Amino acid sequence: MKKLNWNERCIQHGLEQLPVVKDRRAKEDVYERLERARRAARWKRRWIPAAASAAVLIAAVVAGPRLIIPEQADQQEASSSAAETWQANDASSRSEVMMTTDAAPLVANEVTSTAVIALPDRKIGMVVPVAVPLFGRFAPEERLAAALDELNRSPLRSAAKWLDGVTMTPEAGGGSVWTVHVPARHRIFAADREEQQLFLVAVMETVRQMGGRHVRFFTGTKEGLDLSASGQLKATKVNRQKRIYYINRLSSFGDVVLISAPSDARSFPEAVERMKKPGGRGLEPAIPPEVEVDRVDVNGRHAAVSLRFSDSLNIADEVRMTEAILLTAKEFGLREVTLVANGRSAIGPYPLGERIKVPAGPNAELLTASRR
Image 1 (cartoon, one colour):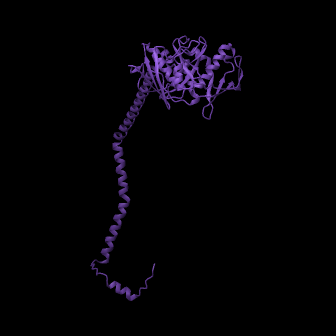
Image 2 (image 1 turned 90 degrees about the vertical axis):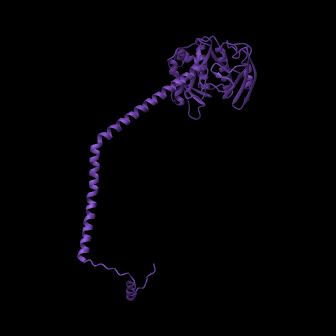
Image 3 (image 1 turned 135 degrees about the vertical axis):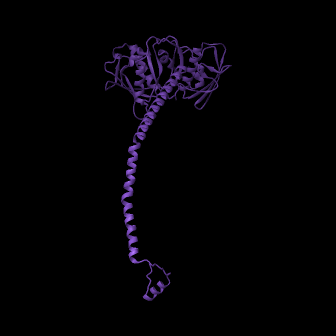
């Protein structure tokens, strides 16, 4: 900052330029006024905050019951209302899912998760895959255990007992490798050769349905599985051959079931043509002679199937045929199928002319029918 060289004469000249102030008060009067103002300011600093605090405290004491009690009541009412809303929504959600399950097979993207368990059927010498709906959220390693618990509480428990104590869980790293642990005293070690073979097929089909590609076997904590039907088995690959679904009416489960069988069909249209022929070993064609397949078109993950009915069918057989077509489409990597048929708007619960999502698995009605 620049320093100014003021001399006495300059200062005097500057003071002479200021306006003249006339104050006739005595210095004692000025001092008294200043002292009164100072005392008033000091009183305000001390007593006004204290008085305000006291006023707030008195108001809180007087109005306390009216302020606190209604607030608690409002909180209780809000909590009760929230609980009732949650319970209503939960009940509505479970009811809606159960209605969907009863009306049609579970689809892959439903709110509920689904596990597919293949159950041995000694009567027909094959395994029957069953889609088991799971209510709630389950980690991948928990889904099969939860599904087995559901089966053990159903009329299917006698078939499910072949998997008692058996754990099947995906290993870390994408879920392509699954670990299967069989208890050392499991009944399978004393079973005959056919039962052991069915047990292995059931395990492999269950893992395949759940997306596994490789299986590692353990007896207890010891690596390997020693069965007379297979010898020493430590690890194996899951057969990734595409399947075609057929109808079986001889199952010991007390109902007509859908069973998949490996096929050498190279495409979904070719597989649909194969579905019009028997599969052997009591497997009837899923598409009966009364139904003609006019056309099958595939575009990406979607297929369009045109059917023509020459004669009326039992509605249950029509629904099974539709489900078999959808499940076979899933085997070939399709996610949605549009079905059309002459003079029809629907086949059972399946609308025609609209995209239908492929089911998560077959034979879901076995479990729901057994609960009625």
